[in-house]
Image 1: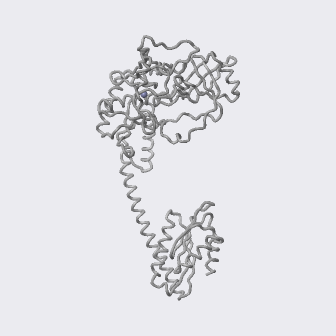
Image 2: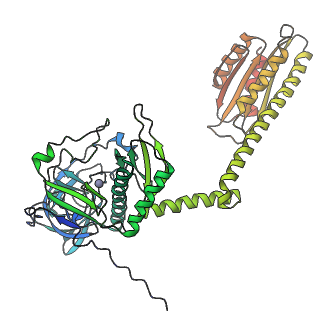
Image 3: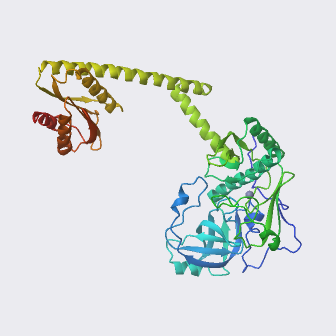
Length: 510
Ligand SMILES: [Zn+2]
C-alpha cells in the first residue's frame, strides 16, 4: 500500500539570524517599533503569521499614481486605492517593506472586533526612515475615524501573509537569493561586477546588468557551479550589528545616470541603525536588507544562455537573464505549451518545429512573390482592355468607372499597377486620346469603419484635380496625388446604388 505524503511546514533554522554585536538587542517593548533590519520577516523569512501590537496609525491621502513608473519591467507595487488609506506602524511584522531591489509584500492585519477576527488588507509596506509602514485599506463599511478607533496604540493584532501573499514573497526571495549567488559567482569567477539587477514581474526572467556580454561557455560554467552549490544545499544566514554611523555614512554611495544607487552601501535615507549582511556559506557576504531563503536547497538556477547587449551610447554593458524555483517551473511550463501548440499547428514533432517554421516562412515568401507577379500581369491585362476602349472612343473623352471587390491588404498597390499600366500604354497617344478613369475597390464584408480605395487616372492633369475635388466634396474621400494620378480613401459601406452611382454622376459632369 502506498504511503500518503505528509507535507511538513518549512521552518527557518534557529541559527539563521545571528546578532554579531554583544550590545544589539531586538526591542521587546510592545510600544516600540522594531527597526527595519531586525523585523520578523528578516529574522525568519518563512514565518507567515505573528501576534503583535499597534504602535501608531494615521490617515493619509495617497499621492496620484506616478504614470512614468508604469511602463517599467520591474515589479511595481500593487496600486494604492484612490482614497484615504491608513499608515500603520506595528511593533513587529512578517510583511517585508520594499528595499534592496525586492518589492513590497502584501498581507493582512487581523483585528478582533466583537470577538471575531476581521482581516484588513495591507496593499503595500514601505520603509519610512528606519521603520516599516503598512499601507492599509480602510474597510468599506468604516469611516476613517472609525478605522482609527479600531487601531489605537497598544491594540493586539495578528499580522499575516495569506497564501497568495506568501507565494508572491516566496518567489521574490527565491529570485533575490539567486541573484546574490549569481552575482557572487560572476564576480569571483569572471571578475564581472553586478552594475544593477531587476526583480521583474512574475513570471518573466529577472536580470543582472554586467559590464560586458558573456559567451555561452562562460554562462554554462557559472550555471554548473551555481547548481553544484544548490545540490549541496549550501546554507544561507544573516549577520546583524549596530550601524557604525560615522564609518558607514561616510561611504559615498555611487549612483547611476538614472539616479539609481549601485554597489554595497546603505540607502542614504536609512535610519534604522542596523547593519545587515547576507551570507551564503563560503560563497558570498553581501550587505542587504532583503528576505533570503535559509539555504540554496531547491533553488535550481537557470540562466538564459545568451546575454542581451544594452544600447546605451557610451557603454558596452549587457543583461544576463535568470530564473529559479517556482518561476522556473512556470516559465518551463509556458515555454513547453508554446512549443507543443506550435508543433500541433504545424503537424510535426517538437524537434522539427524550427525547420518547419523556416520552410513555412520560405514558402510564404515564394507565394507573396507569385501573387505580386500575377497581380502585375492582371493589371497589365485590365489596362490593355481600357486602352482598347479608349482607342475606340476615337478622340473623344473616354470616361469610365471600374469597381472591384478585393479582400487583400494590397488594394492600393493593385490599383496603382493598373493606373501605371494605363498611363504607360496611352502615353504616346495622349495627344489624340483623352480619358478620365476612376477605379475603386472595396472588401466583401463591410461595416461603418471599412475603408474603400479610390483612384483617378487621366490624360489631363486638370481633369484629375477637378474630379478629385468633386470626390472630396461629394463622398468625403480623403487623399492626394500629383500629375496624372490621384488616390484616396472612403470610410464606410460602399454601395453600388449610392457611391458607384455618385461616381457615374461625377463622370457625367465632364
Ligand atoms: Zn540583496
